[in-house]
Length: 147
Image (cartoon, rainbow, N blue to C red):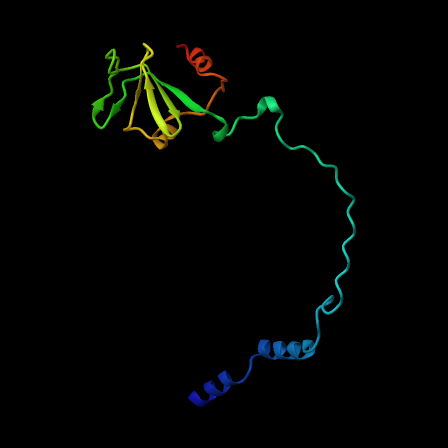
């Protein structure tokens, strides 16, 4: 009984026979287009060169064209668990934070400046929003921010 089952299992199935016949027929044939030279591409007419840059009034200066950046900071500024206070007048809120030449400066409402070494430009970039305007002078920027 077991010999008959083994014999049947050793014989190829109908699907295997059909596959072997098809394989024998296709042996040595190549798909169409193989071995023929590729057709030469058709020449394309030259296209007109178009200026794809924004108009000058919509362009934003790059970081190397800007002398510095400034943002308002109205709430108290706490660094390393300590509230920052102006050394001249004692103000502790309504700061302007200036980033210029890799340094951070704080300006109080009274106009006093002090360098802040606990803040770096990475901190400034994380906390500042997108620039809403560019100005030619420092005074123009102060007027824009209401100072």
